[in-house]
Image 1: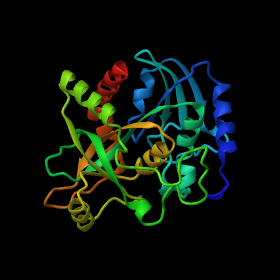
Image 2: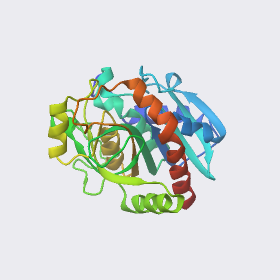
Image 3: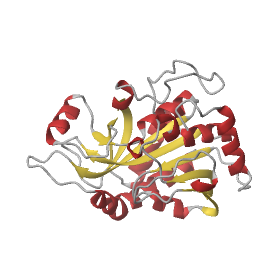
Amino acid sequence: MTTHDLTLSDYRLAADTIRARTAHQPTIGMILGSGLGVLADSVSEPDYVPYAEIRGWPHSSVVGHANRLVIGKLEGQAVMIMQGRSHFYEGLTMQQVTFPVRVMQVFGIKTLIVTNAAGGLNPTYHAGDLMLIRDHINLLGMAGHHPLIGHNDDALGPRFPDMSAAYDPQLCAMARKVAAEKGITLREGVYIGLSGPSFETPAEVKMLQLWGADAVGMSTVSEVTVARHGGLRVLGISGITNVLTSPEPQVTSHEEVLAMGQNKIVPELITLVRGVLQNL
């Protein structure tokens, strides 16, 4: 498929495929990043829909992404969870990368919780921290790889969507409240999205810090942009898997990212998300 091949009818067809596989009617969607898919194992009464069985749904080739939808109940809420996501660096168009968000919108999802594994740029951060995404920098979009380039379907959203509050203030306040009640250290900051797949050089780290970014990753920003275009409320949480602020260059690996997610980040992330769901 080319960038302009996907239309409202494609999103509806995919949504209908999902409806035929579950009796649940979720209005809350979640996208789980590298190593964070364990959260989906907490869902009760689950229905599983492999991405390969949904026409047009992108399949990730990256380790740590299970490539399936998990639909069921979590803290009494009906949820649709993406256990893994695809990335621009895998050779997809931006429209393909954000296809799942469009399908969620057409399906009837109203609230989207996005998570990712990110590198820490803020010198006060530590590996294993959770960061509430307060805002983001769409570097890919600024460079011409914006998910809303091309024909705009008014049935999906406005030509020029407002992004002044991309991350819903009420959901952010809810996350802060839950973190305080549960004794979770919740950082807050700006996430910057790059294309990857290479990790950042020391010079690039310095540049990103000067721009005001607190964490860096290879996902999320385009998904959130499309979600807001479609009127969804968004809560974003980054798991800081490694820090990039050491005076000496540090070697970063995907295996390190996965290990930190599983051992430190996932337990607190599960507690935080469960608390937010209880308050919705």
